[in-house]
Length: 441
Image 1: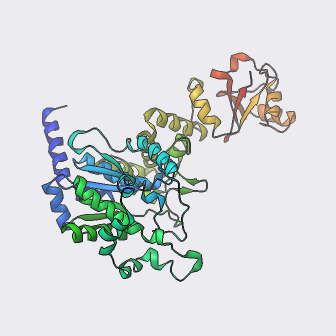
Image 2: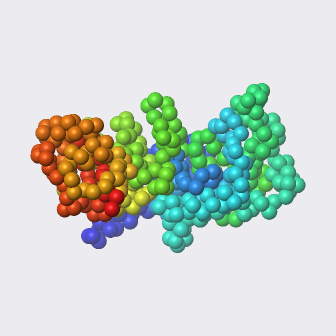
Image 3: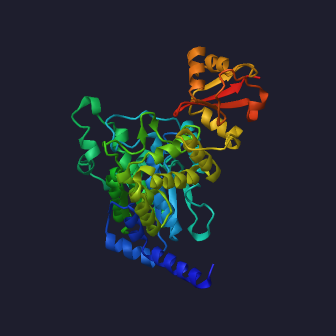
């Protein structure tokens, strides 16, 4: 790289670090923040330690966690220090914000397993080994568990009035309705989260807490507690809540949440989720969920506007995010599987064992016996066609291909030479029906 280009890039990165709050705003991470002018000055003067917390209610993160995590990732990229707080303690209670009923309480053992399970996922977004601004992963069970009830009432509870807590929207919305009543356990959640902020401020010099818009009340409680106990000014910022055009929460599908764990949501389905993003949202999603520059995103959107039906912007978004979460190789496999299943040309050589396993999880899959027999028999036995007559008509009409090879002879007999790795066959019937067959031998 040309030395002058290197210098220019370094200067640009330095300027971005100084204007970190502007970068976060421009990319859409900040919907609200406390004392914005003071926070801007703090970013210009010092390396800021910021934290985001999540309650480990499952053994995987999901798409709903991505905005705050990407916000932390960008802060680290700009030279600041991210802290990820796993709510091993608060997760035993459950945050009532935005909830209409009490959560099921998890055991200590289950929460520990969940925290361990998400550690690897976090490393896709932030680095835990990058010098002075290395990310930290902390568990609030470590300090909440050692605190007695009397200490909690004396050191935290005395700084909050009942009037203050009852005035919070998530409390008001559940008062006076027996079916939506709130327990003292959940009522106390905001105090525990406030104490988390105090602990991180005292231990790591953390001066910024970020979270979803539904966390604003909890974040303000932490700011107030630190001001009252230590006389210090700290800050909060909230991320927008993304909704689809139909008003549903972004990241929810008919099958439930879109998980980062490939055992829960396959890389192919993860890729497809982003490819199916709405046109009116894709630019915002590129800003929030990728490390592409705003200039590059503008170029992508300009090209996308010429032929939006090709969904090129969505494909870039899907490839960037799937690579980030699942690695480039799995992202590429997901991309090619998507192209194959949606009519793209392919070379039979591409139908490797790995690709066939991906396809087998997404299309009808059957195990067949001996492969050395007429194709029409195999089609009937595996329910590709309902009868031999239908199978013959499909073949005569040129609507059947095996491993990418169109079959025109209705008397065609297969043999072992047609088998791909590990005994797979890939059948296409018509334009949109696909089947994966595998010999039982």
